[in-house]
Picture 1 (cartoon, helix red, strand yellow):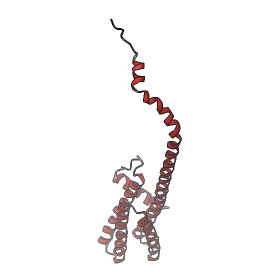
Picture 2 (cartoon, helix red, strand yellow; picture 1 turned 135 degrees about the vertical axis):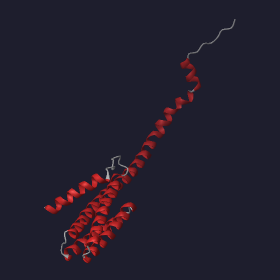
Picture 3 (tube, rainbow, N blue to C red; picture 1 turned 180 degrees about the vertical axis):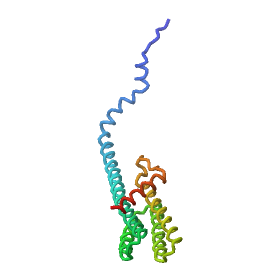
Picture 4 (cartoon, helix red, strand yellow; picture 1 turned 45 degrees about the vertical axis):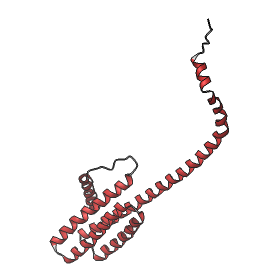
Length: 185
């Protein structure tokens, strides 16, 4: 009879994968280099994220300024302010509009451009003193004002996981409330 060598499962794995024993030396030799390269990559990734956050914060400032000035122009038109006051407010809006153009967000630029054209049309309608044109112009500027806010909000929430999906009616109602409050004060 022949004698059979019996080995344990652990010994079998150690024989089959003995090359893994050298892995520790490789990690000891290259681990710090890999960690250093990973640190450099993380540094540049963090710089990119910081720049993106700074640009988003700047866009938020521009959007807030634009919304406030646009609201002021619309209210001045609606409540028949002096032409010099409307002109002054429109110049401020033009500066804010230029800043929006620099933001580079196409959807926001498109809707702000439409709102600008609507305000210009409303100015012409108010100058004509035609009631029908004035009512239509007021409705269009209000619609585009709300659309501007909606697009700006969507841009601010993009990629953050924060929902920007409020109904346009809810936003419109809140904006109307704020405009009434601003007019009363």
